[in-house]
Length: 315
Image (tube, rainbow, N blue to C red):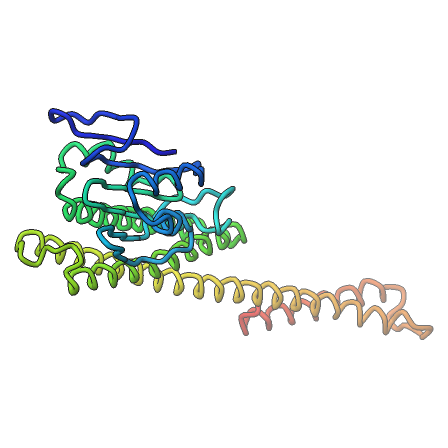
């Protein structure tokens, strides 16, 4: 689907075809014929559109004549049916920002909070000709949602850990593994996004070096992105330590169960062994009370063995 928006008298109006200084929102489901028609209509390489909807596209920037492409990855809640990973709670997908002299195109392979925010709120307050500010605002909000999802994952991890303290079930461990997978996506793409923004600042790709306010704004976003990456690394290390600790606890609990079962087996073996001796074809002394004496002797031996096991803490 493709929608066109234009700012007329401080109001955002949806239009039918691309015009000068308009916004273009390209979102699924995609029609490759319409993408090709859009490419021809505003004279942009079709590869810029196709790369932006490639779920595996990495963060990068590129320029072709007067057309600029910036691809940055953003976090989304996992759509199990159409996802590249059926287990992770959150994954990352690319957002493509394509800018020509007269148009601003924003395209993504799935619905996400950054684009929803941009076309519902930010579009009302940004001048379509201020192209560098468009990119900076998307960068800033992208980092914001990374941090928000990281906090949500950390809360879920804490709740799952509390459940694991009372029951060591595979279900909780599976949930922790799903969070761990999400953190792998986050760490990888936060690092890639940070490198992208650093390169953009160093090469002056947005042509903002002469504007101190915007340059400082980009540096602040890079710092926030670095903090988000550090958060993701910390949460990953905590989760790895948690899963190792619970793995050790489960293994230790299993060892305790096996030790107790072995102790019970030994306790039951003593009366069986004594009974087997006296069950042979032999003359049994202490008639006629020998049966009860043998039972008493077996119980005494088993009791002594029980207290021995308690002393060495096998029970």
